[in-house]
Image (tube, rainbow, N blue to C red; front, side, top):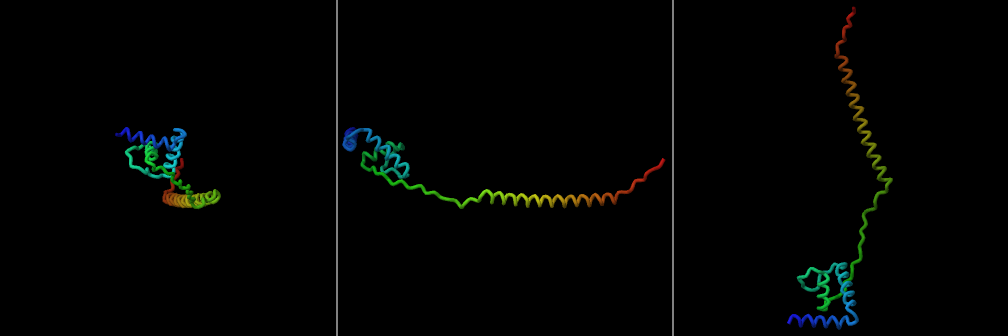
Amino acid sequence: MESNKVSMTNEKLRQRFSTSQFDLVSYAIKLAENMIKSGRAPRIKSDKQNIAMIILDEITQGKDQFEPIPEKVETFAAPAESYSNKHQKFTELASSKHSEKKKEYSEKKKEYSEKKKEYSEKKKPRKILAD
């Protein structure tokens, strides 16, 4: 009984694609490509994972239709900053950090010189012994 069903299916396909089997193959390829690009789900229930087999089953059951392929929607981010703006911001940031470091260094230097001065004041003068 199963073989009878297959032959009827083959007969339907032969009638539909009477000119050549290559027409069937070409049509199936275009339909599979459309299925992938449109992202549609199979129109038949099948345990098969192979898209080509699913497409052939759709063709045999007469559920083959082309779906419209959605156009690519390009999203644009906010306009990127120009190189000169980025460079200017970087330069400002670097110079501010440099100024902070320079200020920090001068404070430490001042602190060091004060400590040195205190130390020299606390230091007792040495006596120079004469012969």
